[in-house]
Image (cartoon, rainbow, N blue to C red; front, side):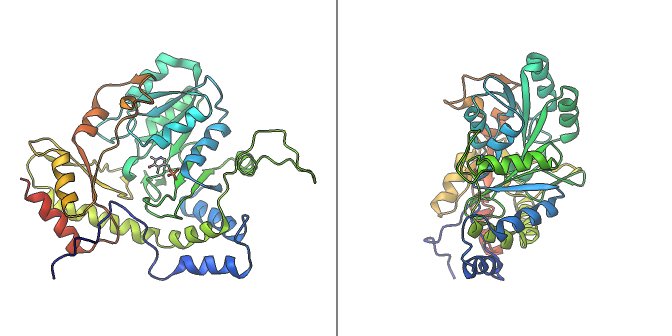
Length: 374
Ligand SMILES: *Cc1c(COP(=O)(O)O)cnc(C)c1O
């Protein structure tokens, strides 16, 4: 049967459990009329996620971006402080630095990890010394950064380390989940992530007092008083009990999703690995990725746009690699430390269609369209 082109194949879109777990948790919330505020699903989602990754405490929030914002605030980042941030990332990593009126300094990637280059980070510390308040490291596309040298540099300079693990839930570095290696970790449950609550995020830490403080800020900083009293700036950042129900259901299929993402990566590797001048994203021996997106770089005459446009003609979504922050009109005025590796990854990279609902037939179709370009 020919494929129906009206059905779009997405890069990475929501995939609810076949078992209907999400609806069971939502139903519970409805049955008790606890759709808001907070409630059992929120508490349990925090506990279950913390247990899954080995964190001591977690706060469920409205988005990954909100989680980064409150992680920076918890780290004491204030006006004029410097925060180191990888240049190769989604803007949601960097925006909260500006919300705090702090100053981002962007750091290049290395080819070994595609993530923050520890050597560039070291150079950045040499330049900025004790003006640095925090380092935000990202685990792009589910690949972990090389954390040991980054942790060591942060310790040496007595700086808080925050992991943006929005794309890497389930990824491990030397046996430890990404998100628990630094002082704070954040996850996103946006619609395109490996599991989703439609929108949502989580902040994790072993520091109980700081997580309690995050929950306080996220519910309008209400002091303990019968009247409404506020001695600090507040935010409306807490996750709803309905969405937390979706998250609990999704968490039960996280391992299935990782297995399928890995299968997709291996499928592409066996079908496209032989094409001239194609390289796959780096899988290091200390890195057990969640394979959120399967990404390649092109070093011959076929360019990323050739692939993206050929797939788009067949109603299949693929994307370039993130455009580095130091090349963005909004962020280009900030300092950048490193060479041209992130620029090269952006210039040559493609994120291939990595939706877990794809069948073998869909994967073959994508590979066929790509192979015809060679
Ligand atoms: C998705 C994403 C975020 C933001 O998460 P939201 O839940 O969409 O706010 C932050 N950082 C990275 C690297 C992301 O991919």
